[in-house]
Image (tube, rainbow, N blue to C red; front, side, top):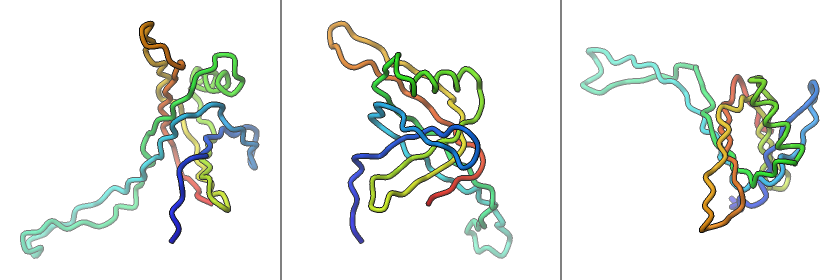
Length: 142
């Protein structure tokens, strides 16, 4: 097995109808990777020998995750994200891993939080925006 560096991951937003046209969101500095959880159903019984027993409940969730951007208030991709947040509608997103060949993780999601970070006059830095993305529905890894 070959290890892969995490530098070069892209966060993309899709537009139009399937097959979507995806545009890379500019200046993403940290792309959180969503966790997929599966709800477990307990079926512990008197014959379980004092141990809890579980089966997969077949109900899965892609957990919310964050994306940090070096925020450019004039960038078209950032303006589109704000419009999506204000509309409250699900968007098509894709995380592209920098592998050969590239691996794409596609899903629909809503922007749950739009969080510009605090600015400090004594320690100037790039203005950062942290988005929380809440995936909804199924996903595809290709």
